[in-house]
Length: 313
Image (cartoon, rainbow, N blue to C red; front, side, top):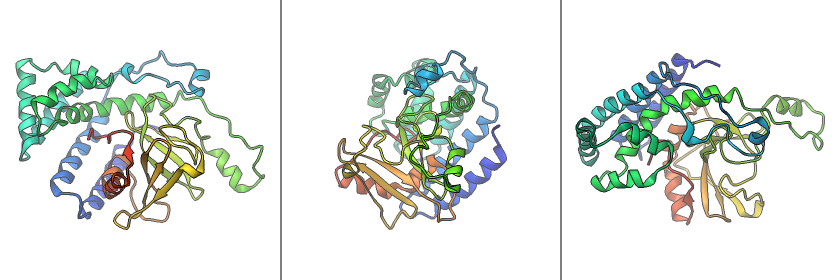
């Protein structure tokens, strides 16, 4: 399916309106994220990375190997550089440490102290040492550079992932223990759940889950390439624990439509969006912000998040 900008923009505008109604989200944060999301959406229409063809075999992919390793993702270099400039200028108009960090980054790019190709590749290779070095230069906004790099590469990464999704082999559903009913027929029309929690395209861990259809099919949202893929109903995305005694969930009144799934084996948590009975727009990257109160509660209960948000913080 081709990228439908008009529909995606309409969904984004509605979701941003929902975020603005949340008293726990500062206006400055919503304004920044909404502006960056709009820039990314516009860029995705024109992103033209070369699509890799040297992919993992279908058999190995079904065994849990990603189609393409994260570090092998291609990107539209010219576009990414342009987006860095555009988003950095946007951030520089804010107030406080993040604006100062943005100016430092821009000056470093112009002077040659910061090589953007090196920074892009460091992000793809998850080179934490590279970003730690820059974080030390901006102690009051340590994730400013990773936010910029991640934001600039996202349109390319999503474009590559969408192309690679067409190459994913289909899993065969196990119907041996299911009755022959209309519900079963519907389920067979859906992609079978993956046996592994990580992304089948890039191998990254998800940052959120989403429940779809009246049956509550569970889908994971990849923290790197944004691919949505169906996973098992009962399993930890991080350690693969599937004992119900070690898997629990809770909700809070401040975040209707969301819950936190926790694993007592590895002490991690994953937020889940369930809008099946609500008239709400679902955009996983923004669902993550809207459900922020759940992060605080999960942390207070002693659980940690298995990965950063798709915004790099």
